[in-house]
Image (cartoon, rainbow, N blue to C red; front, top):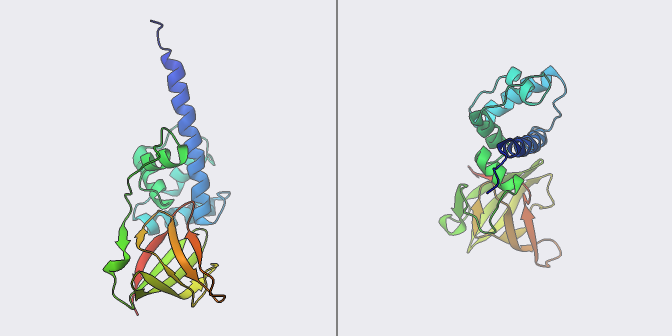
Length: 203
């Protein structure tokens, strides 16, 4: 049997990791809304990461990861996990499976926080956000139906109603039987690429 060339396998692994890291850095710039081009950009990104994840990655580390400062050091997986959570993925491994498409199954488990509509009481409100800057607040009407009560930067408008049985954080949100001003039912997806986040809103 021929000997396996281990150096080729290691090179392939490194190329894959580099490709995935570049994709992750693009996602981080997309989430932060800025290109990492100046020292100030890295200071702001460090603050933003801490605000979203409660974990600190100092600006000098970010500069090395983004290649702003030359370094042979590779980022630790714990650091990559934090960056992935900032980019709305559960972990580096989740990001690699989902974005890298490596041996990705057609069937997968959902790991994000979930909420069933029938767990809500009428008049309870949820705030739904997704990239790049969509922000919508909805009110539960009962029987799996919701009404939009506030909206910013979204095609959804105040007064629209729709049905949605299940909310899963970091996954796309599918709305059915969406009714707008023309009273013609339609379907709509929020956060198709990067999923949504949600939180309860006090009235």
